Length: 149
Image 1 (cartoon, rainbow, N blue to C red):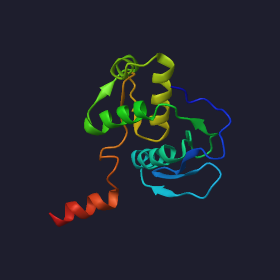
Image 2: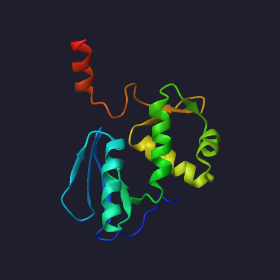
Image 3: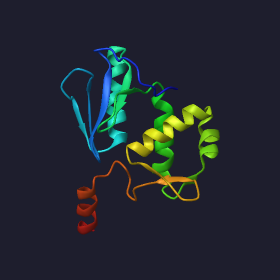
């Protein structure tokens, strides 16, 4: 997998981090087609567009250049591990073995998930989930469910 800067085509799909907790998905040179409250939803929405148009998938941070995401499955897999197991703390080597990928791919996946705010690095060198609630549940919905029970 590679997350390297390159030249995207006009028909490629871009996940753009507009602000913390806010992502848009669009064709690279088009109007945003999806407005997403988390990276998980953005990945899911973006994956539908390349399937229809045979386009590549790209990610750009708030101020960053687009980087190609060639193995969305690996990113989603690690994202899901941390969402399903909130107390999970793994070293880079453990993540690499879990995903069965090489070191550069592992580093790229970790970098993307840290950049979107899902992962944080602890002082002991392990990576853990940066947020307490499930990434797909918006804060206002969590409050509404808590107050109604």
